[in-house]
Image 1: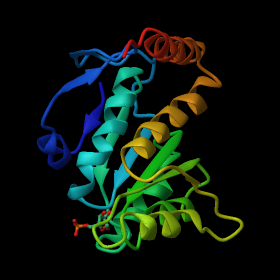
Image 2: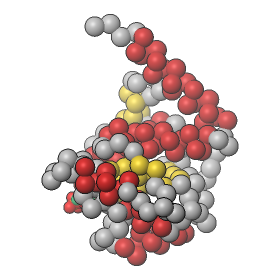
Image 3: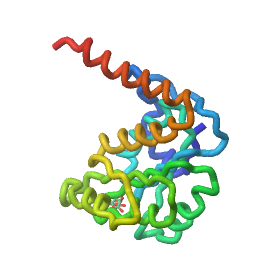
Length: 193
Ligand code: RP5
């Protein structure tokens, strides 16, 4: 089952997540065989949870064991370094880093690990997330961060991308991804205005 730090878990308003066909259902146990979390969903502040809960819900929908944590590259730099530098040894395979404003979190995490790091820029008050996007995407050559869209779409897609990475070596996840796409298309085809 997905593990959460207490603070983030307490922030959850709704423990129901969308299913592959888009309807709500109660949270269910993860199905992907792994006793330790495979994906770390790291965000710079508790205030990012309202956006990043969509990554959490998407990973839960696919049954991927993951953790959600608040770690700030600026306010808790040694924690960021410690998490990223020990993640591979702990069995993590993908890290999602989400931050807003001077959004250096994903880049800092990537600097401390060779695991794939996916960056999600938060929509900021001052510049609507353009600051977050540029801070996340403009990495120097040699330290890659796969950067996604600002806000909810980025949170969902980072999670789906993490699933796609994991699916390279897990056929049950590949099947789920195919079903997800089929359900998505069926929903569009059946839409009547
Ligand atoms: C970033 O600063 C966080 O990722 C968040 O998006 C932004 C604002 O943080 P708070 O002031 O709301 O804690 O580090």
